[in-house]
Length: 450
Image 1 (spheres, rainbow, N blue to C red):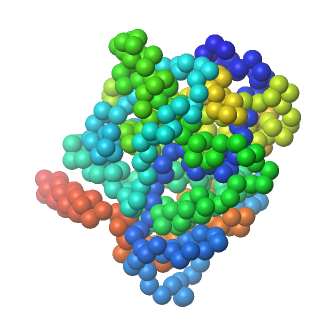
Image 2 (cartoon, rainbow, N blue to C red):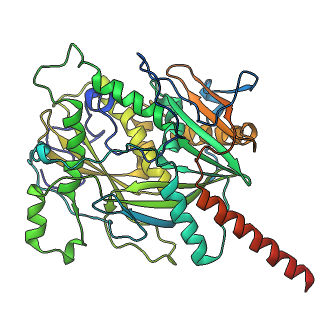
Image 3 (cartoon, rainbow, N blue to C red):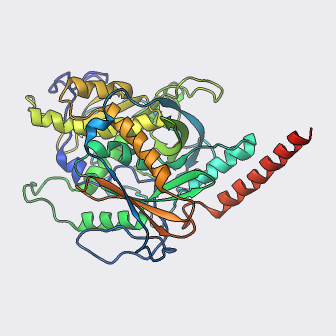
């Protein structure tokens, strides 16, 4: 199939083809979560991973539990809350050793991959990076403080977190298996949120040890292989330099290039949901064109790369609704960082790349509305806006709070679980902001004296 906006020959032109349940529900996320939680002892082995509390936790028996019900969804219907288009505040990179770099050295550029490539190639030499210690919000705050030093201006927002946390919140109304555990702390009016690192690590360990479903064929790829396919697709689709500046031999060599997830580029954007302002950080896969200068108001042409299994020639309604449910996460992830395009690599059951399709992020909710209508983008936005407002009311200035949604519970709970900030916010960032506040007060005093 030509590498264009048209689905593979065996797929209907509308809606696009469907990924397999196994890839979505049994494989760990293709992207390493960038959000985590306070340091604490590893939880005891259990059949089901349970959220842990910060090492600074106190007796919370008397701490009230505040609850936010997801249902009924009709209270979130109608026109969406006002949204400000995400605008990049700053960025940073991780190099080939996954070391922090305050530059754009790890930006990649999209160029269509060669079709009929086996995504399994190179699996045995995959250079895989996975967090073993809790990184909290460290890199995001480090980049933010550096930006503020350069400009002398504080980036004042209501919430600071990684994109992954807001994706979980935004998609909760329509995710039947939604569950999350986060930690939040408020400093000088800003709420900082990160994932429960230990709880998520325990959950992943349990998933790795879980035997395959009985219905799964013996020769079916396991979740490690399916995770690798996503990384391989990235290597096949990206270049270290803009395509016009890249020699043909470099482009052709991508098929045998080593696969690693150590190098990454992260964009940090400012956006808002209704009256609630947010600073979000997240990994971006690459650019489809030149990046506009910081002074430009033009959107950055980022692309998000995804892989999905192609459909048989006659997809059923069940097939379509499964895919449109997966589109929910595609849309939310890209919408939150202002990524305008999702590039989907359609693959066979055994990982052969069959086709490539571009989907505009802004058109995804309409595709679903005209299709099965299994989710509503406006409801997701209004739910997120209402939830953020409720969180403001229930996260105080007096410690660490757990924000938790248990599977199939339908209710998000918030409870104070500890003192201090439990390293959610780094000491260096706190000291920087404290010093910055002192400068602001001095400047205000000088203005009053004039």
